[in-house]
Length: 331
Image (cartoon, rainbow, N blue to C red; front, side, top):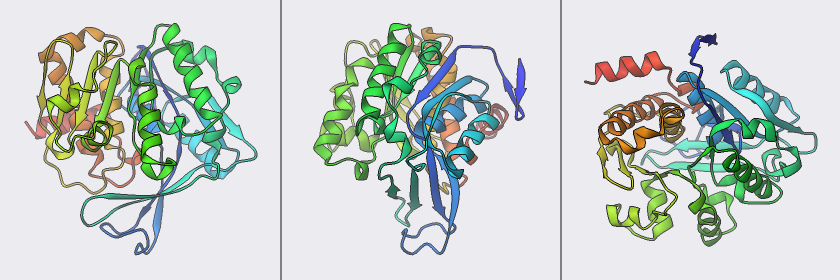
């Protein structure tokens, strides 16, 4: 075991996250629209990068594969990954494009509002030839979203990375992380998200994403199971402050949430996924043991809940000791 930035590292399987990393700008005041915000704080983010750091903070081994701008923000983000013990051997820098920016606010009604600056941003320009295939082949779990499917050449890089990881024996983990403003149309978003659906063995969707992908206005077992496919080992539907539903080949159920005062929900789902992957990377048998799976998901829900109590995604991701203390306090 080694310590990185105060985090105790367990020797275990590598979890590789593929996709975007960017700067989230979060208003200094909660509950306002972007236009009404008097100022913004910069917070590192991007769902796949959030997951990589969540894994590392929770004692797992993680790496990030993606592209950043060869600018101050890009090098700052690469530094943050390194500080948090994430392997950055899969990072490329683009001299011609900037690191992506997103302005994110939690409005008074609790909904998040996004405004993105990527025209194009560096993450969109990752090519298949730039992939660190050796790193990808060493993954025990390969995790990704759908934003990297929106445009070429990143889409081709995404598909190649998935194929290489799968051929090397990695478990494929998918969190679509729907961001409709980035897609040309809702139809395109749905088609592309579903185009790689049957490859993943672990899938996490939010209740809103379930409604979007199925067209069902009610979040129920029938809607969830309409997304099932034969390669799938675990389907999770997160329900915000109501916990999550889980589905496997042999059983399904619900795990309740923890009551907290949410300040910013950004990164909560990524924290949840990071916790899940850290717990299953070396032992897939938990996916066939319902009591163990429920205990694992309660831990993941605790990670998500803690993340909502602070502003920004990465700054709010918890450590093992924080999660243990939180669960003890909420027993």
